[in-house]
Length: 214
Image 1 (cartoon, helix red, strand yellow):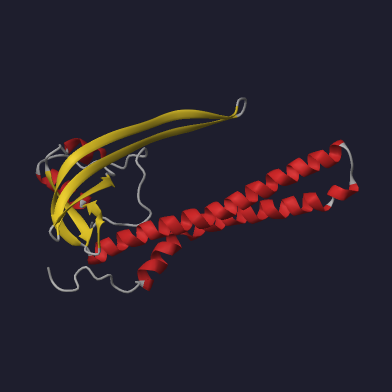
Image 2 (cartoon, rainbow, N blue to C red; image 1 turned 180 degrees about the horizontal axis):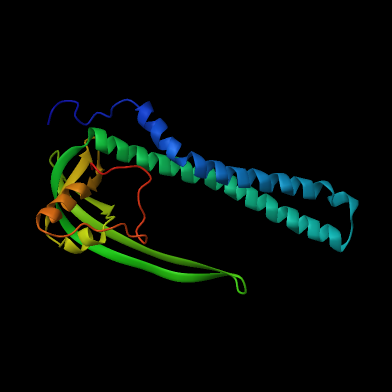
């Protein structure tokens, strides 16, 4: 291995800006709802001393609900956004600085979620229908054996994979444990074998950023 290959490069601010921009709208919405709830709770608590008895209890409970909801949304906005930005920033680095290797598929699992939540028994039902396609693979890098996992975003690709198969992956030299399957390369291989390309499946989550080259 070349000297310095596993040395992490400096922060890519252009990539970081691009990834953060993808999260800006969702972050602003969550933060806005959180701030609104906190302000609403302050308005409710502001008149708390002017009432007594049952009304005071109602204001206390209502203000507490708004305050807790607001603080939760604000905390969730920051935590989820930072976590997601870090994830997609790493995917971007993988696309720009990663190395192409071969790995052996060791296991795959299909998880289906199909539930209906009764938000309001009379007026509103929330239906969640999701499909998670996950694979595990092993590869050799820098004299060590690594085991990683990745999500597959094509059902046809997932069904075509079999345990023990050699698959192309991409790895960051300084974080070998973050390797991802090169799904575009596998999809192109399927096309050459005559398997038609799959249309977008709404049950499978799509990445926020375009990593088709990985």
